[in-house]
Amino acid sequence: MNGVREPEYVQTLVVGGGQAGLAVGYHLARRGLPFVILDANERIGDSWRKRWDSLRLFTPARYDGLPGMPFPAPGHAFPTKDEVADYLEAYAARSSLPIQTGVKVDHLSRQGGRFVLTAGDRRFASEHVVVAMANWQRPWRPPFAHALDPDIVQLHAGDYRNPSQLRDGGVLVVGAGNSGAEIAREAAQDHPTWLSGRDNGQLPFDIDGAAARLLLLPLVLRLLFHHVLIVDAPWGRKVRAKVLSHGMPRLRIKHGELIAAGIERVGKTIGVRDGRPLLEDGRVLDVANVVWCTGFRPDFSWIGLPVIGQDGGPIHERGVVAGQPGLYFVGLLFLYAPSSAMLHGVGRDAAYVVDAIASRVRAARSAVAGHPGRSSGVALR
Image (cartoon, rainbow, N blue to C red; front, side, top):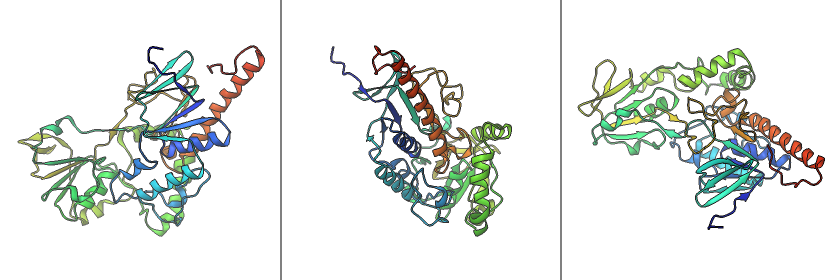
């Protein structure tokens, strides 16, 4: 047929094999619903393996398990990023989830009542699609970054691994959130270091301390982040708007630790003068390195459906897209609560979305049963 391959049909396709996609797969498998998970990485857990070497979670291991499998570490320990990656790989294997790695979805559309996904020279057709990924996929740097002297080493936090990538000389870390503070503290061990950007505050307690592990973190993670600050409540919606626009406070590193490390806190970096970074107070820093901890932006440009809002994020209600029945999102920052993007919280959102999928499957079967002459392959609408 003009060389066009017929799409591979799968009842439910999950795009993304990170913690969100695996949690969705777990619940689909428990309900006996056919599905396949497509992941662009060559190995499950690679999205964690590619992050900077010293990264540790902000949540103890007792809160880091996905549905059906506790995290294999002492409950009070804060897992490293490689331990998380290995856990996700083991989780997928233990649950025998049908995953195809190395498959990057290029486009999602809707044709004849079914979704059609293209991935290179492959095409898939499906009744349901779950986009299981975070809001932020595309590293962002300010437009003036290209004007810095080419001798200055520039790294985005997404490309930073360890201080061996830095030149001798000063380091300016732009972005004073969690990643910026942690990278600045690491760089300051061998380099004069400046940390630039707005201060979003810090937790009023030490998350590594015994009191936090035994009492405060359970209150914050299990009660506040999971049950209180939900989008159904006015206070949850208020916090959600602030988190999405300004980010989270520093969770581990305190202001005093930055001072003790010899890091100088400075204001915003607003431009470039003579090839060097320019601060809002008019100072020009003569540094050899700039690490951009300026975050990521959404990149849902591959979704060819009218479901993306002006902020670049999807329009949904608890992950369900009313305007495109059968399309769902899981893993977004604050999808339903602060825990939505965390290992201990994503399972609830996954279960909610899978309940919606199961309801559509039952409705389609009932429709077929009510029309005996109708094909059981009827598209769900």
